[in-house]
Length: 426
Ligand code: C6P
Image (tube, rainbow, N blue to C red; front, top):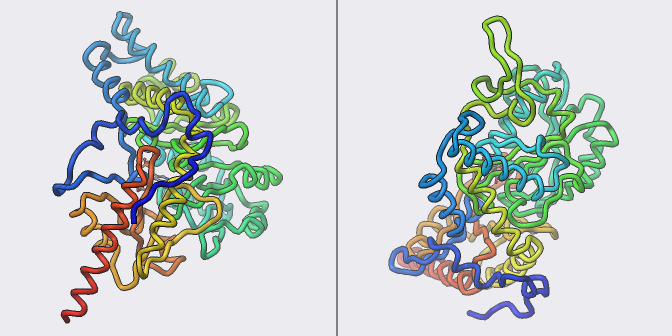
């Protein structure tokens, strides 16, 4: 059953740092689980961290730890310099216009809630519409439902095909005079479908509707340029792009952010406070109340350096090769059906196996050292649309190897054999 993908794309092989050796940068991958080498295929849930990122956190706490923007002492200045330099790295990384457009938040979820409450809530009236799609993660559904409940607005949902592609003409028809925002994921966490977000933004902007793009599953796996996409807001999490947990980014167009009221009140987001009146700080600090996750932001900056050293196009090409290999390999498992077969796909493979429950599959795989996710993947409405309770999901990163896909397939063949034996035995 084994074999390696042949003809790895040029971009994947001609890079300064060969991607194949980058796996050694991830200490956690070098361990056994249940006596077998760990095969980590749950990268859509969170990616692992390279040594450089781990070392940067340790270095920060051992040498530079202090609060930012406050103390006039050496450590505070160092911490502030590194924190703000991470913001510049994020700006470059997604090609935002200015650093003021980069707001540090806890992650994608917090970024979307911020937009829902600070941008949308003040402008929503009863009967207004928020447009999303059937393939959204709960983080790109529930914040809009909350603000709809608070204002009497309505959530509308653009349909997808059975293979997991957005129906663009229908989406275009659903953008109307009452639409106040369109929120769409760039890559589906449950299906892997890649949405043509630049085209979607163009359609929405033709009707003066702003767009938020959920970039959680995109930003660590492909080049992302918010100005080329043209979106008004872009949200992502550090932990899904080889950075720490608890840190993420909201990108927002400066003119919109300037008009938005603060979301949370506290230190850092003010210029002056009296009991009568508070003046708010300038961007981006207006949206960063309280002591931020300083180490997290610094670690995110280092994750960006790490990704840039490998090259995002090279990462994308390599993961596409792995996806092609895995798609072919999974076809050898009897009764397996892929869920999500859009032509433009990221390296996420959701599947069902006849007669087997996803949780049983993942439990047996875990005993083989193979880590996958099972269930609804925080996309219950998508599962309902597809008429299934959930799937088993293998999600890949550039450090995965074809041999690990082989281990997954071997594990699945064992699962099938095990349950068939059970059935035959009555
Ligand atoms: N998806 C998964 O296993 P946070 O938790 O804020 O970092 O990210 C939320 C989120 C938002 N949008 C998309 C498309 C996502 O995939 C996620 C997180 C993980 O698929 C955990 S549920």
